[in-house]
Length: 370
Ligand SMILES: NC(=O)c1ccc[n+]([C@@H]2O[C@H](COP(=O)([O-])OP(=O)(O)OC[C@H]3O[C@@H](n4cnc5c(N)ncnc54)[C@H](O)[C@@H]3O)[C@@H](O)[C@H]2O)c1
Ligand SMILES: [Zn+2]
Image (cartoon, rainbow, N blue to C red; front, side, top):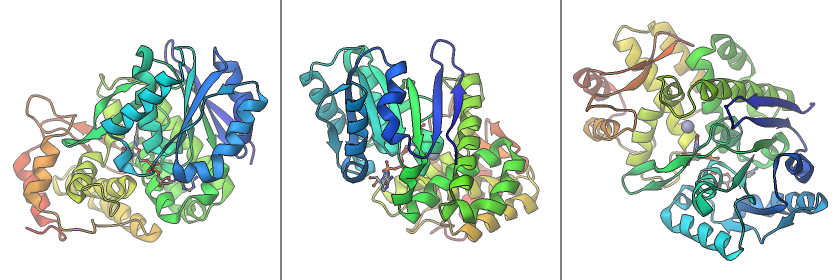
């Protein structure tokens, strides 16, 4: 499988996404041309560090980078906190980095989100590089420049926009990713197909099994297609101001509510919540008469076929769900905004969703506890 490149076309902030096996070992050589300084610091988590930190550090050294001691965080969603953010910023300042230095996120979306946020606030903004190692991070979180941490009020409520200088996607790192994490990442791939790429859905329906089994060609194609889809939306609406980028939230308002109810304790992964959330968005769209019921049924069948979770592994009360959905960042003037669909590949931003009808739908979901 050859390496390929894509461009995220942002005015003043354009950057490349390189995709393919073996990129980690070429890290230094790939970063050198796009960074203004050889001072660099890698942030990662303990799990990723075990396998990938040493080869990456070696590649940096081989290209003449002067790397600070890496910052190694505990793995898991709990790391996206103010406490760990301060831990990172304290380290960076103690290393006496300057604005031209770069901060590299080597890991999944958790490492990428908190490292990107740190890079955006230390010294009012340092250079940032994404080296995503989970499928979810490779197809979603490493592209687009959203960074952030979680608070008691919910996920990603504190953060910034800070674009990377380059994204290095070494598809070889997926060989060690647990199957459950692969499926969770797959949910975000499916998202792009359901938003506006019906042909991609057809391809996925035929190829998902091979992809999830680690087929290199299928993975590369799906990652490239996903990054291209995300890059196109981000280039057209970098800061979610034009009623476009919000489409990427398909399944996420339902999903974030479920994640919040679960308490981020590992029972329900982000991608799993998004999978359930997309099914809910289509089922609700069908109930409203917006979407053919057959399209909603195809999605349920697809999720079942690939073995993505169809319902949360804990009880959910309809009222709790609605309360949490009301707190979503997309809502304006007290009106509920959701991403709904007129069919597979025909998603749209629905403003002013009727809360009574949503409540009726939520109460009717078979696994709902009330
Ligand atoms: N910024 C964005 O635009 C955006 C988009 C989507 C999701 N996110 C965020 O991403 C986060 C989820 O990211 P994630 O699913 O990558 O989770 P994660 O970063 O927690 O990684 C999942 C697990 O896999 C391990 N891991 C990582 N790479 C591995 C590898 N190659 N082999 C073996 N194990 C590996 C990690 O240590 C971790 O235990 C959430 O916090 C979510 O909010 C952000
Ligand atoms: Zn997501």
